[in-house]
Image (cartoon, rainbow, N blue to C red):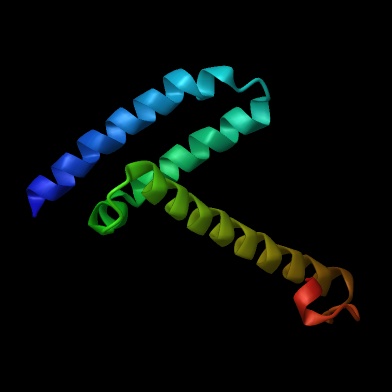
Amino acid sequence: MGRITNSFRIKLDEAVARLKSELYSLLVDKNRRKAFEKVVKSWYEEANAIGAFSQPYIYGSLAIFSAIDLQAQIDELRREIKELRMKVNGGRLDNRPEDKE
C-alpha cells in the first residue's frame, strides 16, 4: 500500500511542479495566486484520499478534490454569515428563505 502512496505523491509533486511552472507563473492577479497556493495546500492535505481514489487521470482527481474543498469553504462562509446575521438581528435570522443564506 505504501508504494501506491509514494507513487501518487511523486505524481502529485510532478503535477504541482508543472502547474507552477506553466500556470502559476502566468497568473497576474495576486488573489488568484493566493487561491492557487491554497488549492495546492488542500491537495497535499488530502493526498491520501486523492491517492486512494480510482480516477487514473491525476489532473481530473485534483480538480474533483478542489471542487470539494471549494464547497467546504462555501459552507463555512455560509455558517459564518448565518452567525453574523443572528448577532446583528438580536438572535434571529432575517426573513430570507433558507436557500438564500
